[in-house]
Image (tube, rainbow, N blue to C red; front, side, top):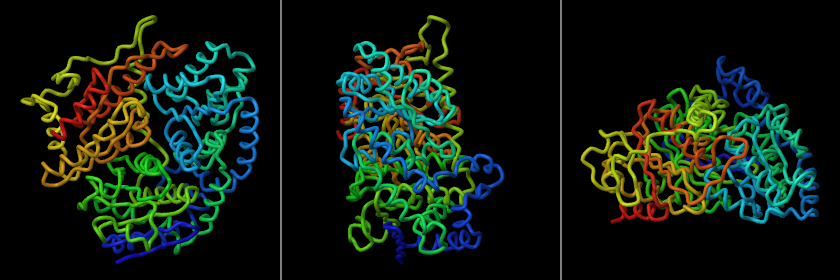
Amino acid sequence: MTAVVTAGGVSVTIRGAVVDESETVLSRLVSDGVPRSLTSGQPTLWGPDAAAEASRRLGWLRLPERSRPLPSRLAELAGAARDAGLDRVVLAGVGGAALAPEVIARASGVPLTALDTTDPLQVGRALDGDLHRTLVVVADPSGGNVEADALRRVFEAAFAAAGITGADLARRFVVVTDPGSPLAEAAGAAGYRLLPSPGDVGGRFAALSALGLAPPALAGADVAGLLEDAAALVPALAQPYDNPALALGAVLGAAGLVGRDKLLIADNGSGLAGLDGWIEHMVAESTGKDGRGLLPVVVEDVDAPGFQPADDVRRVVLGTRPDDPRARGPFGEETALSVSGPLGAQFLLWQYATAVACRVLGVNPFDQPDVQASERNTAALLRAEEGAAPTVISRVPALVCDEVEVHAPEELVRGVTDLAGVLETLLETVPDGGYLAVMAYLDREGDAAAADLRRLLAARGDAIRKSPAPVTFGWGPRLLHTTGQYHKGGPQNGVFLQITGEASRDVPVPGRPYSLRELQLAQAFGDLRALRSVGRPAVRLHLRDRAEGIARLCAALTD
């Protein structure tokens, strides 16, 4: 059975048994008046406990219209920056404030250096660029995020060291934050150009606001088309039928209700590089709480290990049209969903669908309590006496395999003597219906080979397990704002592999008693502490040499 719902340039194709499963949920959503209640901003849709938060977080529904003045203003700012010789744009942000701009920039073909990391090697390379041509966009809606704060301080010091001070320094920063935030106050005191982010929109729902649009626009992207494409979908959102966002939300919610809580996502020629990662962030951080949720598993393509049928998963293919035979993937009708449409419309589509799915699952889509728990752990680990370096965690390994240290509870690695044994033990520890999450606190560019571990672990799991275990991969600390909420707040059936590494370079954070390297480790250890506090199996591998250590890990899964 196949159902195709098309409107506003977006198509959602639903195949197989999932059509029947979602029909009951869709009928209930329609009878409850959800489409019109959502588009009119009714905050009680997610229950009384979520109403106060929801009443302050529904402004995203109006962004296609509210943001109309932005493109022309941003084009003027971009032109002024280029006239001043500032044609290299660096973004310092986290979560949706980094992911959405990066997707837009890549889709537009404009260069944007997106930093949502504390890795000293990756940040160090950005500092090595031509600072005299550099414009820094600091995007942080709350204005209190530790990564954005550290990166702003680091670039301020780098500019000063390059002889860029006073008014010349001030014009090199554009700050996007909520009015009245600590960052807004700091920006005002420094004379930085300030773009207000909408206070009634949370970061992951802000793709069509200044948070999402300003960085790529300043890098040269024409963002007006994104708003036009999103606006084309708006009329369908209040409708009970011919509403692709409602249909998608019903499918996601129905799947979660019956325990099909893994959402495998493969891009199949969408031309929207990185959209899958943005969807991962939207779905995981919104739904993963109160022991419920949907876990997105982003895979390399439709032929990737881990994209095979299983009872607890739904498969999503991005970029195909309903009549494209590739939409069926390698497993025919087993591919449950295919989604296509322009980027601006897809942002709105997935935001709406996720909000609907959260109503079905009974969770608040707008909070992220366990992200904040990891942040508190990080702050505690960084706390130190005056003049003392932060103390983070014991570094005594349970096992050393050449360049790789294995830090794990003794009972988890007892009798294991090599890396292959460690990795296979982790795969075997994954319970039925669970997953393995790889969390790499490394350099997303310089250590890019680490991402191969997702594919290799999925293939090894297929070979040694009776039922395959989905494998996710994320870069830290980015993952703290994407799947990190699901890891702690969603169903407690995950197993975790964290990877850290030595750094040949460090970067001090001016005005703070720690460096980027110490901050990165504190974030990794704070998250590890949070995972272990809820009883999840977690192993940390520390690479004494990053390149060689990654090569050893890959070899252990292929030899």
